[in-house]
Amino acid sequence: MEILIFLIIGALAGFAAGLFGVGGGTIIVPLLFIVFTQMGYSPDNIMHLALGTSLATIIVTSISSLMAHNKKGAVMWPVFKNLAPGLAIGCFLGAGIAGQISGLYLQLIVGVFLLWVAYKMFFGGKKQVASHSNDANPELPSKPKQLAAGGVIGVASAIFGIGGGSLTVPYLTRYGVVMQKAVGTSAACGLPIAIAGALGFMIFGMQQQVDVPNTIGFVHIYAFLGISIMSFFTAKVGAKVAHILSPALLKKCFAILLTVVGFYFLYKGLL
Image (tube, rainbow, N blue to C red):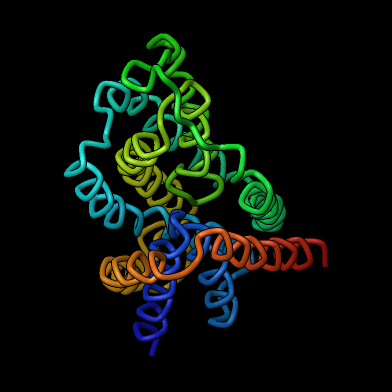
């Protein structure tokens, strides 16, 4: 029964990721939070488990996404090499920071973050059409600054349980990178974030001796397997459907969904 539930979450998360063009973490974290609550897990561990498991599943989906974008030549590998060390170190440290934050505060933090993403999707889409004349050679910051930016994005990604696309794409487009290459490079950046974050949540979770069956630290093994398997396939279906429907309408629908979930987290956290 557990595995069936996780397969359904994976199907929904993958479909939504393909449909709305966002990382599955924004869907996986809220759904796992609800499922783990119903399964009677300790409130102190639920949010940490949802975040750690979400990052673990992103390892699989980011590989799939990275391969697809690389085929189209949309990954800026030199930029990836500059960002990746900071992303990995930041995300590992972020997992440690998240481990020290109570489940209640994590709910509030993630709730506010989801509302911010919803706001950006609802109102910010019109401005971000990056078609600069210097798109072949965008003026990006120096290597140390890119490394530092990677660190900040990594820490935030661990605390929010996401692949970093919500943060990496705006960072790159701000410096004149065209949208397609920003998304492609962000997909590649999701891999070091997911690996380092998942390892961090495993290690810091084991130190806290989490008393939940079928887990390694703060990563639920059955949930990881079920979600990874299904999301890998349904993301492609979602992407196909996205080309049939209106992208503007889709983004607004998803923003409404995130708003509801964000307020749900705030309501549960403030109760």
